[in-house]
Image 1 (tube, chains in turn orange, green):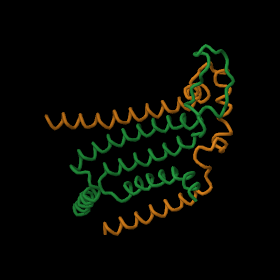
Image 2 (cartoon, chains in turn red, orange; image 1 turned 180 degrees about the horizontal axis):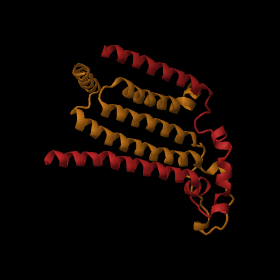
Image 3 (cartoon, helix red, strand yellow; image 1 turned 90 degrees about the horizontal axis):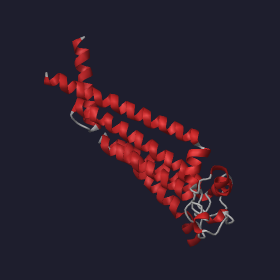
Length: 101
Length: 138
């Protein structure tokens, strides 16, 4: 029964991989400077980052200036994860103390 | 044909990495191995996005040069710098992957505390046994 499930998952994974490799046929070539990802928003960032944000590092300019709401949400994610880790691991400590008693 | 392979082989590497991670998440029975598979999956996605920002032909990291060299204002060429947007997005993705890994490891500690095993089928057997006892009791 377990081997049966492993074969099913292997077939599903190979089918997903084949679909994705078929999809790379339409992707732009690697390192193409005129690919869609490199030619829509990023030229504006590269050309205007120092003018608008006075930061030579474009990555940090985009991270903390253009997309600072994204970074705010990211910090909310870290906060949620740390709080949930805190609650999950605090329950263990309580159980330990109750076992000791 | 060789040109086609050279233009696309990086995507194929990421697809293979993603397949390894997906198989580890689906086919493995150990929960820690599943978590490692999820991390491999996320790493393949991160590598894929970073490789989309690559520009061939002498482009460098997206940190603007100019004033520090004392040459004054230089004309910025877009083709001289890598695409900064995938780098920024993948910083966020790395943070999310760290958060999910931390919560998952904390949950695994709890699971091990309760069942004293991390094998999925053993946990399912223990749960089935417990539920059988419960139905017998009522």
